[in-house]
Image (cartoon, rainbow, N blue to C red; front, side, top):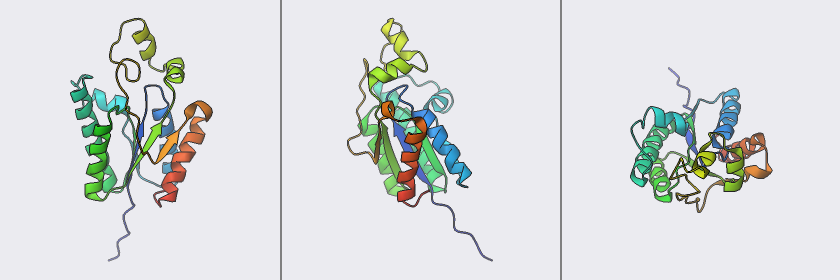
Length: 183
């Protein structure tokens, strides 16, 4: 009996401010990877909040718990041959580092991508109306405005989405995956 080798999984963690372009890039990247025959799951932060992390608020502790839950699911998927593409804000460096360590412990590739869109550009995009609600005084604790965002110190890739299309950003992430033999 012959067995085919299982595909190598990995987690692609897209972190950045609200409306930075994380989910758009993730969906384009996932579509390309699927078209190449890869097993791919997008773990969208908003969807995870509605289901897996329902009931959590936006305190530092709750944000950490949310990121750890997402990190666990991503690592399990990646360890089992799935490319887990994770577009989440994940504002705290220690939370992301704990996710990285989980991946390191299981020998699972983890690729951190900083979607480094300036807050002014994110505010103009304002996909979910968060910046407008914050400016009107109806929302407190908006990451990057009145709550901290700790940018990655040493990401695998930095995307400047204000000067490139979502397709160009997704292509740059794909190039990193291909360079590591993961795409």
